Amino acid sequence: MCKFVKVGMADMQSCTHPCVITTLGLGSCVGIALYDPVKKVAGLAHIMLPSSQQARNQSNIAKFADTAIVKLVEDMVAIGADRSRIIAKLAGGAQMFSFKDASEMLRIGARNVAAAKEVLSLLNIPVVSEDTGGNYGRTIEIHSEDGKLVIKTIGHGIKEI
View 1 (cartoon, rainbow, N blue to C red):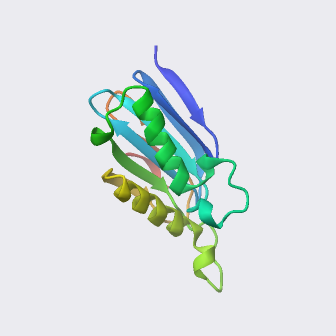
View 2 (tube, one colour; view 1 turned 120 degrees about the vertical axis):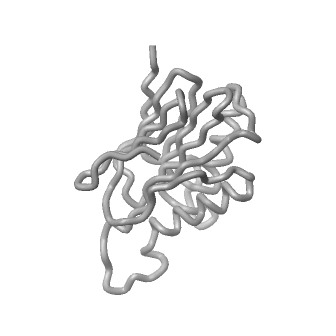
């Protein structure tokens, strides 16, 4: 029987096969799906912000790309994943609102995607596919059977990466 695991905003979970991990409502937030294809260990983080360094309250490490990814990898290794085999898929990072003065601070979606890629690169985890950007929200689910990431959107259909 397959477990369905829900990840909230600023949350993360990992599980062993058979499971599906899902998160709803990725706007500017980024879903970071990690997968070990041999052990079939899946992990998913729903990050809200690029860096814990600029935050006064850093108590929730799942909120930030720089801390969530490191912890998610540790959690996955603890349940059997091999760090050297983990791959990543990204979704989200949308620009949900348009601003007249689109300063860098307001481009949170793009900054979240860039931060996630930077941390993954430092950890030598390849990003094998992504569905990021745009101006629409996404709901995603990662399947432990094969690591496929299903992305559901309103007005843009369903796709798998």
